[in-house]
Image 1 (cartoon, each protein chain N blue to C red):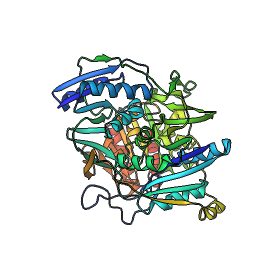
Image 2: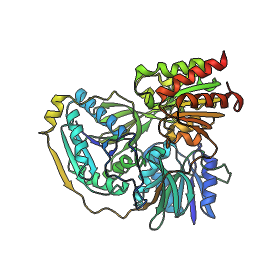
Image 3: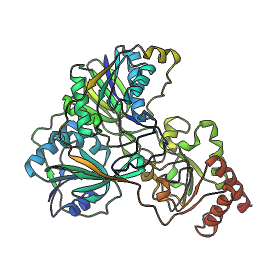
Length: 250
Length: 278
């Protein structure tokens, strides 16, 4: 089966983030980037499905030139080839349109992506992509079973509830973190990745954005909390005193 | 501004409150169908074409996340998801895992689509009509919801909880927080990534997909405070946060906190607590 994994490149976890001078996004200079964590789980699931059912895994990502590095890393982990739609925008609708256009000729059996991105966090690129491709979808998936012509998935609901959903293939699924164990790229994998195909696709104009970020800013600081820093021992002593005599919980 | 509120059981009163705040002319509907993404997308699309609203309001539930972006896309829009404040034409939502807020401005004519975060609006009541769509066709076939085997751990009964997050770095470091839990006589809990990694069992997870707790004291150790975690613990009477990042969102809900390396702070904290209890 042909499986496509849509991945996004986001700033490295725990990067020190600052708002840019325009005040509309983060300052990206000097940042390092990595694969969006839920997308890493989607990639892993795709690789495991290929091991079970055979076929091909294609990693696709839309973004600026630096994104090709993250696609290469997916190839090093075992994806067979990559598609990079080079584009500066991160408008969700535009990106979903670009991915849909690039995937139309691929005609995959299954498209996987993470349930949401760690930066913008809209959690809808996969769902919109399904809509644009005319495919059924299901979200926040904890388990994928492929059967001839159909897929049965375990969807996460709130408060520890789950539900099984069945739908015909081809389909689009958004994958929840933690459904499998992530693998590392092997040295051999990294070496092989260099010779794998990474197709560069130029981006078409997108539909007009229906929403724009006007301002990005740190949330207002909570005034009520008593936060101690400095010497750990002194801070710990102060905290215990507060918990004992003010909150009266120790 | 005409507002269409899509009401499901979860968050119903909050959605009605937000809708009333967003516009004068509010119509609220629940969809008379068993849920599947296809069936609801078709039903809500049909309802929108009938009602012709400027703004459609949803609760940001797992169900909404599953189908509402489909509907929005049919109208050339995205869903402005999980908003915490604002009203048309500018809504506030969290980005970068709660590190920054974004003011998002609607562009162009309606219908626009917005879903509100649980707990961000107070409850209100209003009449809700029932909509029965003309063709409930669906490619997805849904089985009834189920729970995994009974939880071995009931965190909801705990008075004190010590909860650990990514800051612990490795499974081998867990004894550091276990010592704190022991000193306090607390239950040990964790944020999602810790349970995902298998370092602690899933039934010790606090958050939107785990347990919702409201203990007397909640210690968040090395937990940054992504919204999915906060919804599970913000009912705690006293929240204590220990984190090396002073900008971590967990400090926004903390009553007390220490900014510092948990590996330095927690051991001395354990000593102090033992001293007090002796």
